[in-house]
Length: 101
Image 1 (cartoon, rainbow, N blue to C red):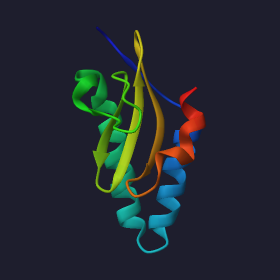
Image 2: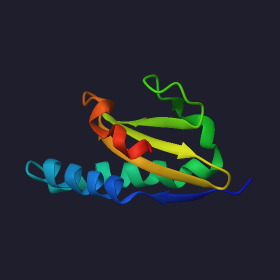
Image 3: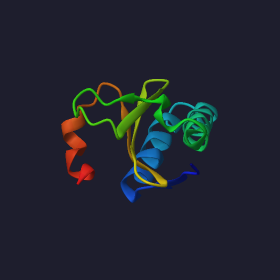
Image 4: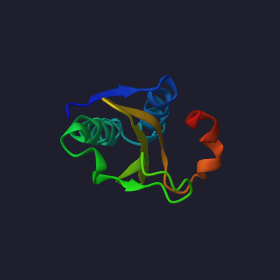
């Protein structure tokens, strides 16, 4: 099955916030982290179930990839992979629960 990757507006804001935060110390590392996150998203259609089920949600269609210290949370539907959130691994998922509706 061919999947299309789509980013939620909130997930794009997450990426921007991550880049701005890291860039305070290093523009180079900010670009490297963002490139790694975007690369992980681009590779999702090849194996969408490669990410683990999000433990807090227990839903086989909501998965996450761990990239450096960030969680990329996405939902698998018929032909789409929707990236819902990109957040630091220490951040609580309950802070973005409203995005899963």
